[in-house]
Image 1 (cartoon, rainbow, N blue to C red):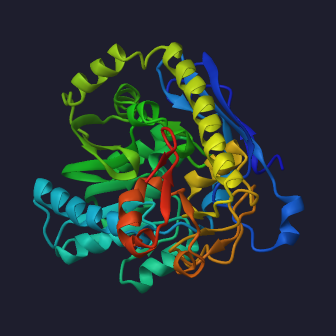
Image 2: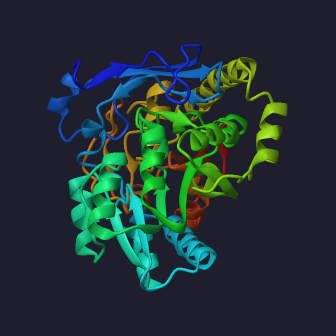
Length: 410
């Protein structure tokens, strides 16, 4: 077990030991470690899911670190199953291509490229691409889809090898990966060293302000080691020899930041946002303690609603089997007594059991076959898409529940 899990003693951004625990979500299984058989339930591993605030640099982070080969060596989440993400990717590729004036001779490298869905959009725009994806199963899917992909973890050593083999890149992209990296500064240095003249490191991360304000505590799980404010990102980029040239706020995944960073000095984008974060108290532990109290209240409200519906003999089910859903299910103690099953569009998850609560995952078609009275949307970041796709279910009298920041019936 020691080889799988270790605990840091200092901040990964500034190496300070002034780390204050403010949120305990309990011992939890790995959020994407679905089980294939009831025989696996008894031996399922769980690890502390505790969140800390660095008093020195304000980075919010987990100190319990799981071996990335265990988390990402064979991965079950794919980006290509969501219409929302597909639309997001098209706009993303067009924005970056236009901003940097990319053409057929320019290279875009994506770290943690998953099934290659984003890079395919750059290929459509006649831009050269290369994916770097540690999950061998997803790297193979990407190759089958025509996206050149190296099955490796991205870091500074990897970046040197890629530069020698493929040349320098005009853009190094990382979407929802920076939070997964234990050595954040090394990752950013590698991206910087891979850049061509005039190139940019561009990455998206869920925004800490949204997590706090919208009570998105279920986005906390072992894969997500860091939760970023602009304040913290400025320091991390500076330590890696990068300056933030542009910051976009994008709605995807409950509210994210897209950071454009360049190797040149003098970039100061995001200063206004950082100042607003300080005014909102994001540099003080008090804000995070208030968040923890609000999380506990949100859990009680959700449990009260589900208990009331159950007492009314209303049938329940879940929609989605996302990693965030497993944090919520385990923290709130929502088991098969509440949700006999959940449904998901990802065929890799259908037929499996969710980590911890062991809820069976069934095809989306089950909703119309079973017509449960109420459906808890675990993939709430795609709630609008889901409700739009399930108009027939709603027309028959079915209702949806979104769980955060507080439960709402739709």
